[in-house]
Amino acid sequence: MKHQATPYFSFDGMARDALEYYKEVFEGEVLGIQTFGETDFPSPPEISDHIMHAQFKKGELFFMMSDSFPGQAPNVGNHISLVLELESEEEIHTYYKRLTEKGTVVMELQDTFWGAIYAKVRDPFGINWDLNYTKK
Image 1: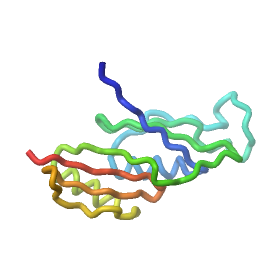
Image 2 (image 1 turned 90 degrees about the horizontal axis):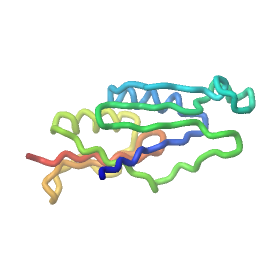
Image 3 (image 1 turned 135 degrees about the horizontal axis):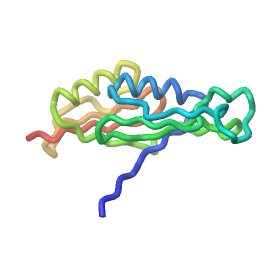
Image 4 (image 1 turned 120 degrees about the horizontal axis):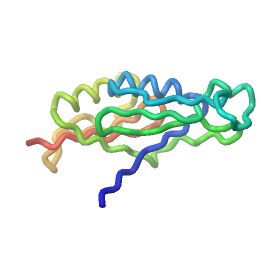
């Protein structure tokens, strides 16, 4: 049986900005956005336009996200890293360029001993992306 882990990102009021950023970087689609104000869930009026749940998809890349509830802000850390297995040198260079425009390079794009081109970038929202293209 094949299992797929779906990343879920939590933000402190920045989910909409993050969603737009990922849409621009990966050229995917937003499958749905539901705000706190659109739900029957009791929530403070100041977060009515914050995202309670959203989904993003580009090919096999799929993740979900939301803003946190007041008083439950997530801590941004380096304990999460998402690996993207890319299909071409062009694709890895494109994503690397886009992610590094506003992100921080953790490991430069480079040839590796495991026969791949690889880079690690932390985006402006604290998410680490491991970009990997295994050479043919």
